[in-house]
Length: 530
Image (tube, rainbow, N blue to C red; front, side, top):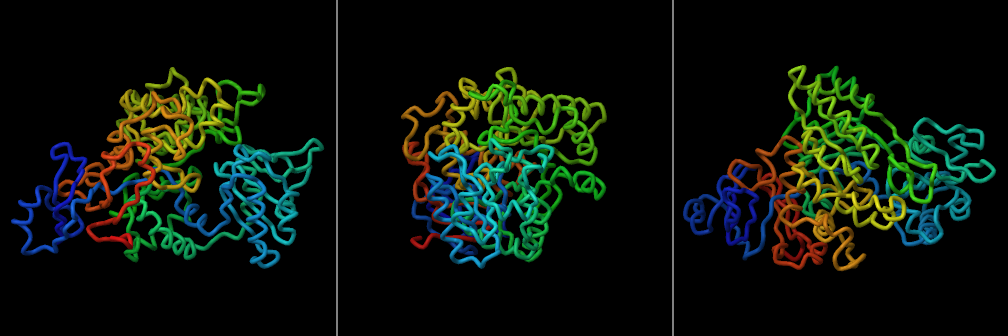
């Protein structure tokens, strides 16, 4: 038994919002109350730890990330640079230490912030002539390959665009090296795939990164290999993280055949939703829009699934007890998804099926007529606050006045929709305090765009934003009765903070670094200075 006392505990339990002590036994919370009361009751049989007035919060959950991609991104070139030239310099540096013929990988470039714009295959050829090079964009919806990689994939001027993707070409029809959406797979599928064992090791090495940010749970949207790796870690008692694991759309028939259901699993690893993609992303202008992008009168993005196709997938999933989680960024994609969900809700009712906790991932821009639809349909808004501040300039550039309805966190909350917050890592850092800062201020860490923030009417109070990383995430996972609150019977996942975030100016939220993280009643990480 463990007793933490002399603390400032923010419990998120409406029946007991604050406390100064917490007793923990066998991975769960036994009691919460005053230090005087709990020390009198438990001190003789508990290991007592004086918190010296530090703040304790429930452990935080990232409700949308790509755990395998994030883990391996820590081993890649960091291509998120201020200029294309700096990115190319990093590729050249990696080429010096990579055997000729071996792949060079990187992630994070964003042509929208580079003065030079998109790169080309020739740019990469100049700095890495002896290697195939493949760099994924920050959005994960575009990639940049050199000539060696294009040759290995057999991509030439005569190669047709794959369904749901585009090989970007120059004025003579030759591939430029930029691949959008499904075209990324033409090169990406050639790269030697990691084994389940190496994936498990990469995740194992990434766990301390997550703990030191205050994360004790994630909702993962990678594929089957990641699921296998997570099972190995769970079986070996190494998965000290609550993971909700999605199922890729292409695996839906097999999942139903096997009888997998949302919520099935262990305390550490449970089945989540079936993941579908309704459109692309803002950065490469492939998010499906009702009206064309600003300055591109013929481009409304890519609608990858219409409402009828989504409903058919939903009908099959719901019959097997599986909820849906659908990537939708543009206002047209979100509208199509909501049409499908309305039909699916009718179907669930007609068939006597439970109303599953379906989700929309991202919900980046909505038509005003759809502002209330998520709440009306009981659909969870799985959103990433840091996208709002990261994307604000390109949203203004590509969506213009439609940005007033973009990243509408307050509108969704006030409509009654359940919000679950995440990062989409490695698209963004999974640091939840950066996300809290973005949700509360609608500003970047440097204070831009202004003291009021970008579309400040969408700012949230810190208490509301905190729920997105705690109780909202737990609700989305169907685990609101055992996670995200510091209350008797709940799992003992918590973090220790050097100061109460509620006592800080909102602009300083991004600078908070936890001092310690507890998972299932055991300290899994402590700062060196604590």
